[in-house]
Length: 277
Image 1 (cartoon, rainbow, N blue to C red):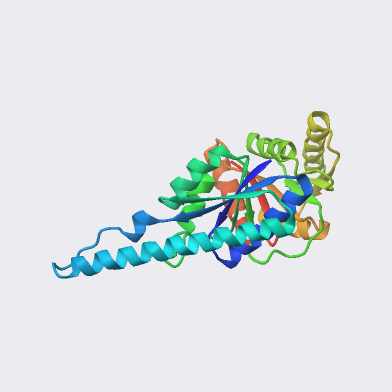
Image 2: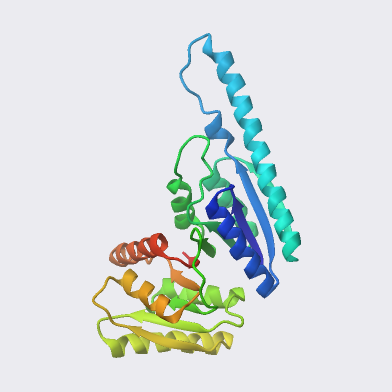
């Protein structure tokens, strides 16, 4: 497997690197570290006086030089960590708008991995939810999102499954990735009817076994809490070290419901989340 990992020097990226190295060691994956210099935003035009044009040009040049220097620093640090871990790594430094650059580059790789709170536009703004959300909606490939300071957890995985096309796609994508290797797999379904939830979860387990030879345990989740809170609570009970989620579903109502669930889980999770939209 070839994993593209986004680097931008934050605590979030440091946590993502740690998860990526652990994955690479466990399934012999190769890692590609990507640093982006957001030149379009750094040199974006702004109204200036006639006398201020020269100052603006000097300022932009200094900001760009600083951005490239930091990118090289992150990439060199990534290479050092990879060597220390005995993992195959290589690096890329690209110039462009972060979301579009990542979306284009990730098509050359199997999985994209990044920290939940990455900010590729820190030169021009304090937060960058736009890049993350745009990638999530347009990726078309598996993504692993890592929270800051992920909590210690077991090697198990909880797959959120409702029988939908989106959930089935995510389940198959995860199984095909090799990430299920040597892990205890749980397939969890939320429903007010416990027996119905168990049957749907059992179908997910059957799919994993029949198509991929992966043995999984069904989990029926019945709770008065929200879907996201119920699933996060079950994740904690199982001590699972990763959550697998499907993405948006064609139905407008389902897209609204599951989109909000995905968002809530991403915001509250203390373990990495594997997504496939």
